[in-house]
Structures are given as structure tokens and as C-alpha cells.
Image (cartoon, rainbow over all chains, first blue to last red; front, top):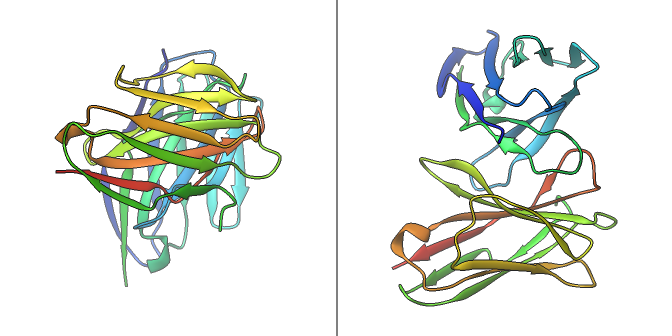
Amino acid sequence: GENVEQHPSTLSVQEGDSAVIKCTYSDSASNYFPWYKQELGKGPQLIIDIRSNVGEKKDQRIAVTLNKTAKHFSLHITETQPEDSAVYFCAASDEAGTALIFGKGTTLSVSS
Amino acid sequence: DSGVTQTPKHLITATGQRVTLRCSPRSGDLSVYWYQQSLDQGLQFLIQYYNGEERAKGNILERFSAQQFPDLHSELNLSSLELGDSALYFCASSVLRGGYTFGSGTRLTVV
């Protein structure tokens, strides 16, 4: 089955810096790659997703890139703010209605 | 409010007991997924239902079971509870394809 590896497990940046989180997946059939943000005491919230027919997608300060050949995808957050501090999860599925498999998460801390 | 409702929010019970967690999916979503989140294991997929039928199983223990009812709400039953079952249990819903919407979770503490 699918296996998703996520790095780093923790990331500390200064406000205004960029943050990059990387994930690799094992199943070449996977074609849907969402990212979730989880704040303390809350459920994960979808922040951006990408499908395999697209190499990059942006939404304001957040962008995701996908390299299907290398089976890796990354989350880029620019101009980080303290409210970006949270745990971020990447995930993968084949989008045929099968379940998402999640990475183990990255705890991002943005200090002002 | 995400539209996915989970009850109860907190549950404390003793080892050996049985509990039921409930999830109401977002309106229009036919798929329901259950995940277990513990500190060292991240979000572990347990089981998926689609329109009342079991669709996929993940790392779900035999002591755990679930079902989805005709009104699409789902229940996760955990029996013969052990200390190691203490975790956050999340329900998520989706249309068949696409991103999930998660509920706010049930925190289970087994003492």
C-alpha cells in the first residue's frame, strides 16, 4: 500500500522567512496530494491540494509543487506569520475514492 | 464549524470497557472516514464507508468496528479498551473524490 514520508518533523523560522516541507510517496498510482493544517485542539483543515496533471499550484502565500517522476511533493509558505504556527500534514491517494494516507506531520513554529 | 460533527468531544473510560463514537458528515458527503491520531503515529486510517457500505479498511483492530447508517451518520465502536487506545479519533467526510473535511475529534482517555 501507499506510504508517505514527511520531512522535517519540526521547523522553526523567523516571521517573514519562507518555510518548505517535503513529502515523498511510494505508490505510483497516487494522483491526489492535499496538505492539511492542524491547530491545537482542532481537526486538520485542508489548505491546498494538487492533482497529478499539475506541476505547481499557488494560493496567496502558499504553494505546492509536485514531481511525479521522483514521487515527491512540497509545501512552500512565504512571508510566514505567527498564525502559520501549526502542525502540517501531507497526504496522498489515488483519488478513486480510496482513503488518504498521511505523513507524520511537521510542527512549524514562526517566531516574531 | 467544518460541517462534520463528532460526539462526544471527550471520553474517559476504564480498561476493558466499550465506547461508541459518533460522526455526522457534512451535508451531501457520502463518504465517511475514521482516523486515529496518537502522538507518535500521526493520522492512522482506520476504515472508510461510502453510502452505507464499507469501502476500505486500514489499520483497524479486530476490537474496533464501525458502521454507516441510512442517514449517513457513522459510529465507531471500540471494545475491550486498552491503555494504548487512548488517542484522538477523527471522522472526515467527502464526496467520492476530493479533499476531506474533518470534524473536531473525540479525545478518548482509557484509564
